[in-house]
Length: 260
Image (tube, rainbow, N blue to C red; front, side, top):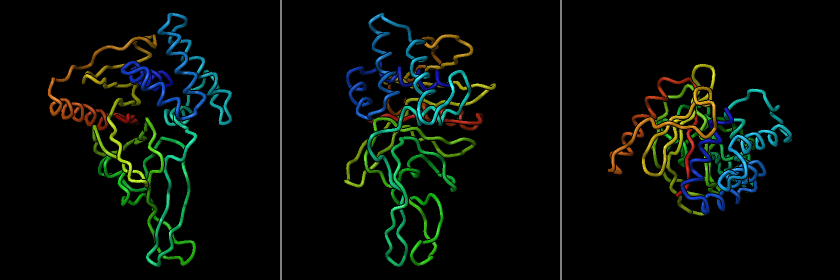
């Protein structure tokens, strides 16, 4: 399952090496930094992508929340290891009818998991007014809903949505608490099928590539799934159709978005 995540990041990095190196290094994540170093070594012919993969996995295995090398884990755990940042990404909070504005918790991880309520779409998921869970005000006991607001907009976001019917938006905006607006684009769908994870990777030119580490045996191997038309409108619609079909048929999915 590490391959499915790392390959998606590698394809993104190849689209603009300098830009993504600078932005991903800005997260201050040691695993991501090591992975980027491995990509660079591969480009120079000094190492293989398997080396980059294994070095990152070894560092993950020796991290505080260790995932033993050679053992299976969840895609969500792998994503958390490479997308934990040095800044607060989001804040959970609630405001009760009696005027109590309560900070619930901060999150330094650019991975969002499905809440108690089913989201109609990814756009709804990231809206400031969306209600994610229910609780009671700690001061007056009034029923309140926990909401989400973004403090720092990371270069990558992962949406974890197993067994969900959430509509997949191929692009969407997020507004931070400082009214900074950033657009994100869908770059990969990672899903669980036949006892392992595979991925569909969407490149900047609208191609959809299929990656299956078990079938192709090597981290460098991807094969084309579909080439989308030259029209941006057509490309967006067809990517959405492909992603929705996957969501309906797979047990577990991840949506990785990139800031542009």
